[in-house]
Length: 498
Image 1 (cartoon, rainbow, N blue to C red):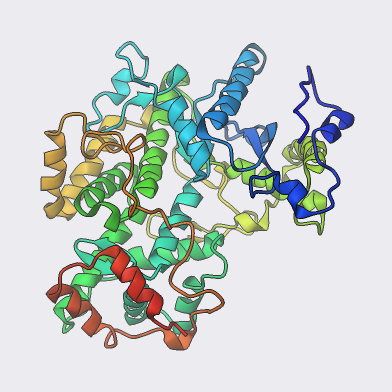
Image 2: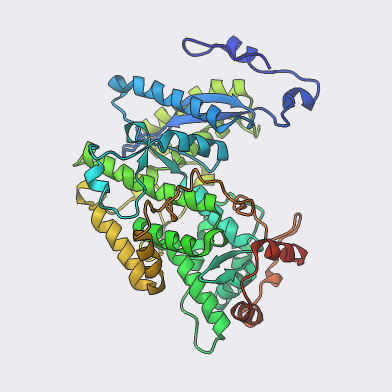
């Protein structure tokens, strides 16, 4: 590959072309000896504002890469981008409060290097708001920078874990797809609905993801007359459902206690870290908003990479039937997406949002809110008060923990033990930061793929079992010790799901 040419301003088409292998005779020319086709990383700025003229993403970075670069190389790219944005602060009046991405590993390593540099200083203006939050992780980067993980990616990974053959372990019960399907059927869901939410063909379907998670958190108590195995599994499912439905503090404490109890059998460590990072960032961002703009508002749904997904939706509309695009097309048309975003900001009633981002809105009682004008949640759809002056982080954080201890008393001893553990917090359950800890070889994060069916097969409605069919499975869980996860996977791979 030719070297990247520096450009003092916007690169010309000639410069871009010179840095791209535009013609090749075989796929080997693209692989460049690294067994990976060269791809691109796109960075954008999203403003945390309710003003629809402002919050759509504006792209500022396009970096060609081969997915073989190290976390250190990613760190250099991101730090350069941050420096450029900060250099324009007198003009833009913008301050970077967090950096967000999906669950890509190299960016995760770069985020750790950039946002886990120091412990929050007592002289920081947000220290008085955050220091009373027991078990909160206080590591930050320069200028109180914190990382974020896209919440849709986190929830999709939880859904994928529920679809894998070995399931997850909650309160000593291994919840496999077969058991979950049985409980959904016993609570009145049709076989057609269960087949839809357990369909492994489209792992990026956000609507199906939230349908499954909502089905779990809406499960009622087990009816009378059921076996102990069925009741125990239902209680574990209801406990898991609380994690998906509780507010941030309660979810943080519940996830911390369950991970501390079951470790990787509950969820992979990397997924737990991403969940904890996502919750931590939301709380830190609220604290920064309270200090920077005490009478302002804060829109939680604008965190993550949702604004970037909107930009990609516009970009794919522009390229038509061509599913992919090369670097030259990308650079030339990203400028167009900014122009489109500005047009849609001015004529907001033209903007219906990319259909792939459709996510139904629900109220606090899990009732779906139907709005014909919205394809995904925007600040204009939010009905509650979002003024930061009405938020007490200390009260909310303590109330979340108290809620968990009241609803699940058996977890109180775990949380109380963490209070007495030096340096323990939501990202260091044993006093050692998980983001820098070397993980065991069997602590694999397979939440990015579904393991419940073999390649080329689908789960048919006729395969869904009822509560009577899974009684023996659940009773066996009460009688036998918990199997090793690798053993469960091997056994599951031998099972025919057709």
